[in-house]
Image 1: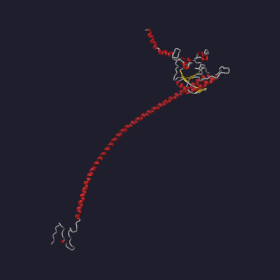
Image 2: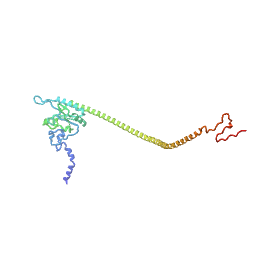
Image 3: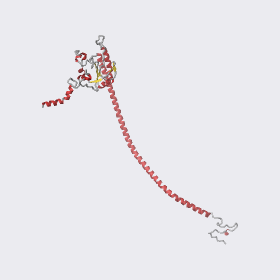
Image 4: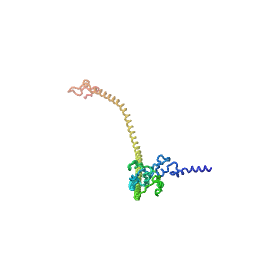
Amino acid sequence: MGGGGGGGGGRGGGAAHLANVLGSEDDKVNCPFYYKIGACRHGERCSRVHIKPNFSQTVLIPHMYVRPPPGPNGLPVEDDDHFENFYEEILDELSNYGAIEELNVLENMGDHLVGNVYVKFTTEEGGEKACTALRGRYYGGQMLMPEFSLVTNFREARCRQFDEDQCARGGYCNFMHIRHTSKFLRKKLRKLRRKAEERDRSDDSRSRSRERRRRRKDKSRSRSRERRKKGKKHDNEVARASNSEERRRMIAMWNTKRDGDKKEDTKEPEEQKGKPKEAKSESKGESKTEAEAPASEAPASEKPSQAPDGAPESEQVPASGEKPAPAED
């Protein structure tokens, strides 16, 4: 019973246990060296998983720093001036992508750490800009292949014995041997960091002001759009009302016109019917006038004879149908 309870407690704390052992020697899945340093001496042949992030504040540029060739006796030469020039040059270049929090160059001699440059930006946006801008560029005759790194705490990644000049492994140590920089370079790094932070703040303020202007424009546009919609709605209502009144008037006009056309259509057949009667009556009247005309124009033989010249009016023969006037004594 007690063993079962212990097993349940172990299963309940499994996630916490994995979180605690992540990146440590007890982690049997993930490579602790790659997790802490961003590089592994076994490379792709490592039996453990190398976690490669898709974004990070820290960018690793492998093998960027190249030492000057050794002297005639085969011993390494002092490269302080060479390193100072290199550090200042890359500091000026990398500060264009954002505020730099740390810039470290390694002195290790191992194949997986030699010449590695680690730059940690204050934001992930700076790391993304630098990684995008530097990929595929050439420096010192070699192509740069920057990548995101999980290393954000260089205190855990650096060799403490090297800082105390007591590392027995020398340049082939698996922890970081970070090259010391001069006071001038550290001061310049702080100065460029402040300048980049001011630039970022100004950019943020400009972006915020642009965002505010854009929001005000959007609000004004939305208000004007609402006003236009309301105006159009009102105009449509007025137009609808006026159109209804005009429509009623037009319908009444069409009805009256249609009624008038119907009346005219009904009158035309009546007129057509009345025209033959009038023609007949006119023909009858013409026949009557023709019959009366010969009566008025009778021949001279049928006319009453007139008395000869000199005869008295009493002797004149009366016309037919007239009674003779009585003679006076």
